[in-house]
Amino acid sequence: MVDKSPSAYGWLVFGLGNPGIEYGLTRHNIGRMVIEYLATSGFTQKNILSTHKSKCDVGQVNIGNQKVVIAQSHSYMNLSGQNAKALADFYKVNAANLIVIHDEIDLPFNSMRIKVGGSDNGHNGLKSMTQHFGPEYYRVRLGVGRPPAPQDPADFVLRKFTSAEQKQLPDFIIRATSAIETLIEKGLERVQQDFND
Image (tube, rainbow, N blue to C red):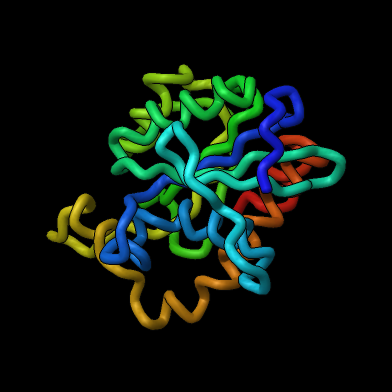
């Protein structure tokens, strides 16, 4: 059950992706996969996400001594910032305590980088988030690799991970979750030391 007291929350962790079963195992949805993992305590419990008036699926987890809102949007990638902002306003979480998880084609599959700020690099989800929050929020960039030429990157990220990649995906998601926990508990410098590839 989500505590509705707005002042109770220190952080918002938001996973980018597209809603719908057809997008479930696509590269563009790796941010949502991390949220699903957090929402089920490592797939061992019932999913704690519930629908919120911001048009997001929302849950609460405890990381260290912090209450953290985790969420994913009901809207497609390019509209996710609007829903995320409505949720952040409701829980009184500002951009300085927003963590956005997203796919990154400029990193090899199974690698990650955590940073704060930067450009959207053509990523429609980040573009939408930046429109509503400004650029200064944390990004957990999860590598999905670049497509082989001449495949269009936009088409590539909407395709499912290969069977070989799917075998590595659970460990990748677990590492991403650990990175988020480290960022919240120990800060940016420590998480970059421990997790940036």
